[in-house]
Structures are given as structure tokens and as C-alpha cells.
Image (cartoon, rainbow, N blue to C red; front, top):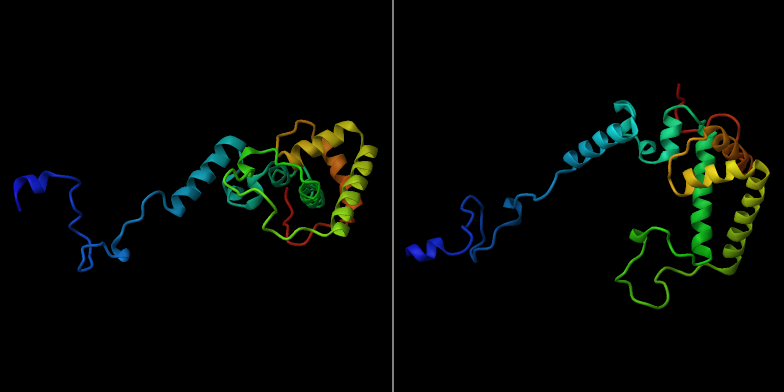
Length: 193
């Protein structure tokens, strides 16, 4: 091989297995980017640094959102956590039922073709049932008062921090009664402090 040929382009990787045509075999390719363990350790460190979550709880799914972190710290009960999750699902279903756009830009698919949805369209009775249940939940929340309603919406729907935990707990208790969640601890969730 001439000197010019050796200097030209990117140097070839000599320590890999190749096919006869010269392509690198898939089993000898190195992974590019971060490994799953590196990504997980970065997320756990960020949860500890930003939200002051203890290391024992940083790996749980509840540490990833504000309502779960309040439950992990013992500020709300398991019943209130379940009520918040149910309310979040109800609001998401309602927004889908009335074709409300997502409030988050990452929720939009800018490359999607225009026209009908590829997902099956929900039937009218399901849409009506979802809208009615959402309206009944708003009526129940109105009984709790405006501060409780705002606190529940900020934490459960928008995943923002709240300073008024008492009103949040009151609103979540109203929702737990509305959804029919029993008073005893919800199965599958461990009790905290």
C-alpha cells in the first residue's frame, strides 16, 4: 500500500472481525453512547440532587413525579396517591375525548400525516361517560374549595411542586371519596414513616 493510501480518510479498525467483503461483523461492533447503568446512575444522582430524595427511594417509580415524592416523604397517604393517579388518568382521558391538544410541545408529533387517527376512534358512549365523570369530579372538587382544586391540578396534572400540602391533601381526600378508594392502605404500596 502506498503512503498516500494509508494517510487518506479515517484509519480502519484493525481489531474487529470482518466479513469477506470487508463489512464489520455485528457482534464485534462496540456500543456507542451511554450504557443503561450509566443512564440510571445519572438519573438517580439527579433525583437526589434536585429533589432531595434519599438513595433508598431514588430508584422507585414514585420518585419520578411530584405526587410520588410527596408520598415517599410521608406527606400524603397511599389512598391520596391513588386518588391523584386516578385524577391524572381521568384528565388525560378527558383531554383526548374533546381533542384538546397536549400542553407540552414534546407531546406533538410534527411529522404525523394529517387526517384521521391511526388509533381506533372511541365510541360516543365512552366519550360521553368520560366527559360526565370529569364534570362530576370538578363538582366534587368545587366542594373542597379553590385552593384545594388549584393544588390538585398543579401537582396531579402539571406535575409542579406545591407549597400548600394541607389543601392538596384535602383535595385528594375529596377525590378519593369520589373515586371510591377505600380508607385502608392501597394494596401494593408500602407504608412510609
